[in-house]
Structure formats: C-alpha cells, structure tokens
Amino acid sequence: MPAQNPLFPAFLKLENLHVLLVGGGNVGLEKLTAILRSSPETAVTIVSFSFLPELREVAARHHRIRLVERGWEETDLDAADIVFAATDDPALHRRIKTAARARRLLVNVADTPDLCDFYLSSVVQKGQLKVAISTNGKSPTVAKRVRAMLEETLPEELDEVLQQMTVIRGRLAGDFAAKVKSLNAVTAELAGGKAYESPATKRWRRVATGALLTAGTLLATRLFRRPE
Image 1 (cartoon, rainbow, N blue to C red):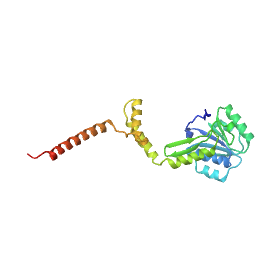
Image 2: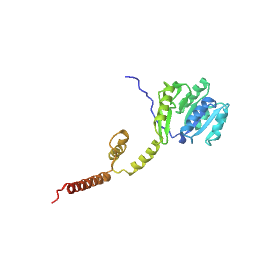
Image 3: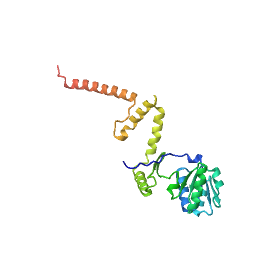
Image 4: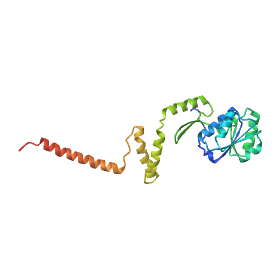
C-alpha cells in the first residue's frame, strides 16, 4: 500500500490571530501575498533589516500590517500566534524555530520542510468555496497543475449554488438524519440522479397527473364513441 499523506487539513481564521513574518525580501513578499490572498484582514508584523519596495506597497494598502526595520529578536514572539521564517539565513531560521517551539508556536520555515509545523497549500477559490491542495511537500509543481485544472473546471456559478444551498438547509425541518436525506435529494440531480421534489410538490404532481389522465380518458371515450 502506498504511503499516505499524514498532514491534517484545517482552515484557520487567520484574521483572529497575529502573524509574525521574519523576512522582507522576495520570499517574505511571497508569504505575505499568500496570507493576504486568503485572509486580507490578518494582522501581520514583518521584521527585517530591509524591505522590498513591492512589499512596502502591499503593506501600505493594508492597515493591519506593521513593518519593523531591524533584525529579529526573540521578544518578537511575545505577541505572535503563528510564525513565518522567510529569510536567506538558515541559522536564523533554526534559532526562530527553537524559540518558537519553546513557546508552543507553530512555524513555517521557507524551503526547509523539516523545520515546518505546517505548509502553505495551493488554493482554488470560487466565492465561498475554497479547495486546498497538498502533496506533503513532495511536488509543488503537481499541486500547481492540479490547482490550474480545478480553476478551469469548477464554474464560477458554484458560489451561487452554495448560497442557495444555505437557504435550503435553513428551511429544512426534522432531525439531522432527515436533513441529510433531504439535502442528498436536492443535490442528486447534480450527480445525474433523480432531482429533489418536496412532499407538497410530489402530492400536487400526483393530483395533476391523475386529473390529466381522467380528462384524457373522458375525451377518448367521447371521440371514439359510436353515434346512436
């Protein structure tokens, strides 16, 4: 049996956390862009001796980003909930990892999977639908290709479907099992199955069908009745 991906998938409400990002260069900009793409209201403190102009421009557009122009200090971890190490200094990364672990903080270390507590995934987003793709760090290229395929395949209308399903779920009565059964019926047509029909609609369909059959029978009787 092939080895399984042991990573635990989770979606964080990052806007409720405080992020420390160490590094103001290209890798730091890449991490910051990934954070803001999914969670634009996240509070991020970025510590670095210098900052790319592009990173400064991004920071200027987000009021919850704070730039600290100096080297990393262990006290920077005091206000952090989660840490990104994104410099070109492997020794600094190891110090950050050691200090963060002592404080039970999760760390993502750029280009060093062994020091990471979590990875950033390739993400496909269609409105409220978000799909995260992980190869357990084995092949970012494969993850990007799968993301591109899903972005092309999944229609933009999926967000409208999600909104309507939320309304339908709120109107369903009964216990959890009954609601699941009803939602399965609602979505059956999407998978090529029988479409959903509410009990009231089903009852009136039977009445209408019976009435049509009765009317058809009477009409046929009159048309084919022999004249007296």
